[in-house]
Length: 218
Image (cartoon, rainbow, N blue to C red):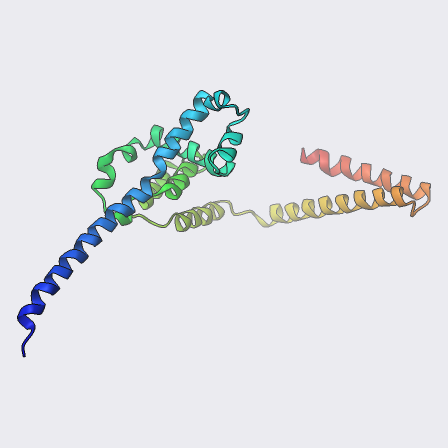
């Protein structure tokens, strides 16, 4: 018995359903990536107009933590990122932006936050920013990878000469010693482990070292 004539329409129907689901998932992915915008926009309005006062909250962070259940750091990043997008990349807020792109290259909140931080970095050139923007806006690169490349680039540009690096290590060692000496002196005073004369000498040494190193540091 030959079932091929019956199986073919069923298979075609299954393929159509699968393709429809595939297209639907792409739309959901885009919506998911840009869903933060409405929250960020609302939080920005609340922060800008101090609306939380009228709702019985003394601080913006009290409102977002107690009423929305958001972490303070997350809420502030959303506010800052939304403001950045509104001022610097308004094209992202247009509906046509996500509609004209594949889901894989629609940047989400994390990518835009990396772009915001890059814009604030005074050590980056316009070309640097353009490259980062292209990675996030056009290529859809992972924000973590972009941030990692950015950190590596900054380190490469900030190569410290051996003498400077040695001086930095020396300063760090002195600070650690001062901290340990201060703690030891306090213990000697509290527990009366040493004679007053030795404690005075330790205090004198501590003052001299602090004057020499900490004041130069300031």
